[in-house]
Picture 1 (cartoon, rainbow, N blue to C red):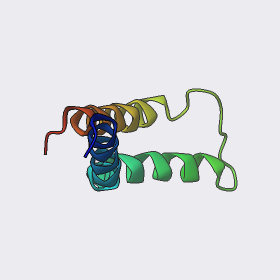
Picture 2: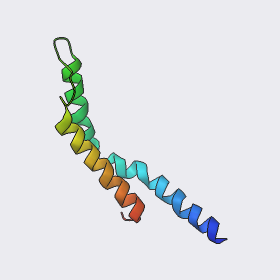
Picture 3: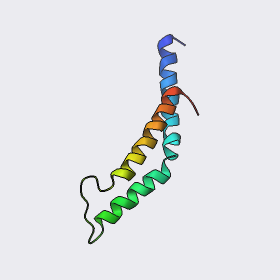
Length: 74
């Protein structure tokens, strides 16, 4: 395999691992979803930064998953 082929092989393996790592963020995704759902329900008032805390937790989890994927860690 050429050097270029080896690089693409590593990239493909990282991309394959990414969905599994994102799956670890299920609790954060559920919390954010509940917040948005509650704020858009009848009588709810969705406004900027209403679910900021939940969104930040989800973003941090995604960032950690991406970092693990890039580092090739498990």
